[in-house]
Image (tube, rainbow, N blue to C red; front, top):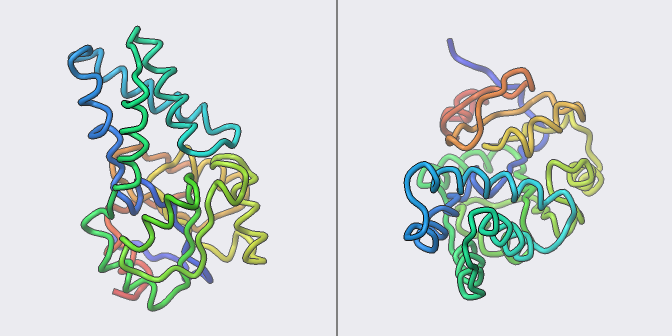
Length: 224
C-alpha cells in the first residue's frame, strides 16, 4: 500500500547520517583494529555511539565532543589515545560527502518546498556539507547556533523561533529516531519520516513513517 504524506510549509532534515554519509567507522577502525578484534571491536563501536549521545547532552563544540567521546571509549577498552588520532577523526568528519541517492531527489524536493537543516554539528561543518548536497536550503541551523544538540528541546525550539513556525508547519526527515523523532513526538511534530539507513531501529510508536529513499518520499508528497 502506498503512503501519502501531508504537504508541509517546510521540510526539515537532520544532516549527518540522513543526507551526509556517516563514515565514523571508516575513520576510527584503522586506529583501533590492530588492538580489538571480532565481538570486542563491535562492542567498541556500540559503546562509542552511546558515549557520543551522552556527550551531547551539554553543548560544546563538536570537535570537543569527538575528542572526549573517543578518549572515554578508548579508556573503557584500555587503549592509549594519541592526539594525532583524535585530529585525524576531526579532520575526516569535514570530508564526508552526500549519500549517492541524495542530490537528485533533494533538488526536486527543493523545487516545491523550502528546505531547512537542523544539524548536530557546528557552523563550519555545515558550511562544508551543504554545498555537497546539490540543493538550495532556505535555512541552516546548527547546534552551535542553538547552543544545544538534539535531542535537547532547546535545539528544536531554536528552529521554531528562527522561522516563527509551529510543529505543524514541518515534515521532518531523519535517520536518527533517538536524536530526532522521539523528542519531536513529545513536542507535537506529527509529520515525520524515518529515512532508514540502518543506524536506528524503527520505532513506529513515535509517529514517523518509514522510508528507505528520498525518491520514495517525493512520491509520497506527490512531486516525483
